[in-house]
Amino acid sequence: MTTGGQPESRNLAYYINCFSQIQVYKNNKRGGEALNQPILLLSVIDAISQGLITENRIFISDDLIDTFKKYWSVLTSDPFKGSDFALPFFHLKNGKYKFWHLQFSSEYDGGRPQTIPKIRKDVDYAYLDQELFNFIQDPNSRKELIDSLINAWFTSSQKAIEEILKINQDLEDSSSDDLETTSESDNTEKKK
Image (cartoon, rainbow, N blue to C red; front, side, top):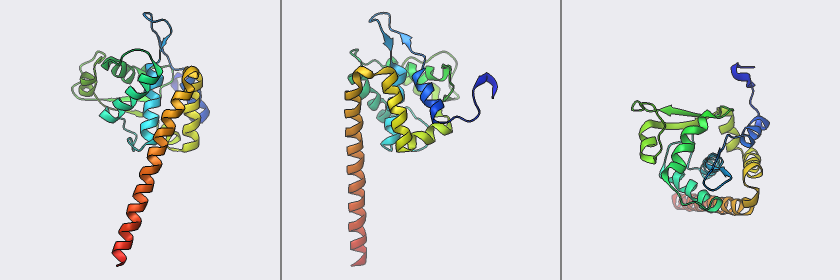
């Protein structure tokens, strides 16, 4: 065991457990839980599966924010505010299970960034435990991780999430097919 009581070897079951026990805050105005952190994780997993994130550095890109907004619009009734993204990006590092890490910029002067421009200034990127990043890259493990998030936090929205993931997979497949077709036609041209 390492300090903090966490196992040295973090397997898929460990991360599935982590995802089901994310510390979410109570939304006192609307009742219920603020599901910003689970939505952020779904967005990151989706971005990795689409090839928008190819290394274990999660930059605060427009693509990631747009993916977050897409899930946000389906999973909450609240209008999107920049803090809905910035706060979970910053606070996910504080959970009981430490799998989300931040690389702060040299400009970070403390405090908690509450806007997208401020978090972009204060944080160079986030990164996951390498084991978790590897699991997300594997389609079978990725599905189990997504299922654990859905089962723990979004059972009433499962169908909508699955539709988003299916659309993204279809787009990914068609992009791969287009690349293969282009590559095949390039090879044919070279042979002439």
